Image (cartoon, rainbow, N blue to C red; front, top):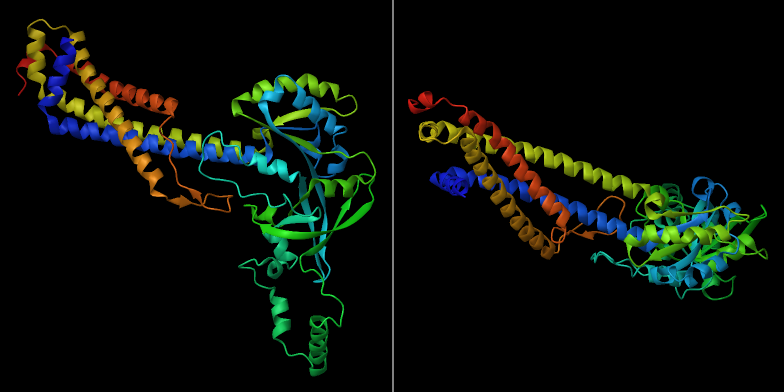
Length: 468
């Protein structure tokens, strides 16, 4: 207790220097916590987005994840309806699973033959009602909401395409897409003069069509889609594109199409028993993944007689998410090391200066009987007090600044997103990060005071007393 009292008095003897060191510690702690809160918010947003769009778990054929893109129909799940029913009636899983929905992946060619253009596509068939239910999941209370899935309530032949698909298939005008100029070749043809007789014929045809005398105008949103069915034969259907939406990644945006699950299922399997390539399971909470996976093992074993099934969590299915979180964790560690180094030298410099200024005092204390350990303990306690007060002040500043940023209404557009996200920093509630940062900075402060304390304790009494 005496050591603590002396340490406080010594720090107050030079208030300006102690305050400068304290502020350096506080600013360092605040910077670490604000970046950690930003990183945590990115984690929650990406986590929520992946769970809303693909669920926590997906049941697939064991080889579908590795080889399914080449021929999705070859990896369909037989009796998927019975499998979903078994999951929904299980005494443990029925309280965990919010949504169990089948999906069907496909690939093929989409063509707008009115414009004489076509392109290869990949896509998914979804049960629209289930997707909108999945969009309601919000375990981390993030502010971002998923847009409504427009296929719910739409016709069975309705479809959604990526902006790139709509651009290539020349659907921009029909879908009212901005920033979608016509190809240069078409513009050249339009601007070039055409013979008078051809122009008159075109005008006559347009007049006949508008007056109902010619053929009815084709639906400008209509596409023909060719896929290979389960038997290996080509099958064609017509779909009406009701919306084009960005997918966030240009390569995906150029090829992606979404269709109603029943429609693509009929196209791929026809009169054969229908299948699904995946079953998405959305749980109430993300910490139930391990329990649900363990509970699913015996259920999948019953349905794996002729089709080896596997269950994959959303982290395995979305490696970009895992890589992004690891990148932010690495940057957080790098920032902590940099700021920790600054704190180390700041506190060390303060304590070294104190040792020099108080050399005579150290000699006096040693002369009246204070042991070397007492001198070391005094300076280490001063370093620990600076570290503790600075870290606590940093936590308070971080909480206040995070609240101000969250109330500011700022937004930003992260890579891979098509809509700006609210700029939020999650510090309050991140107990592990706050405690870890505080303890880490206090340990650095104690470590930086150790060498000056050792040097002070090692002074000879006579040399210290005659120090000028």
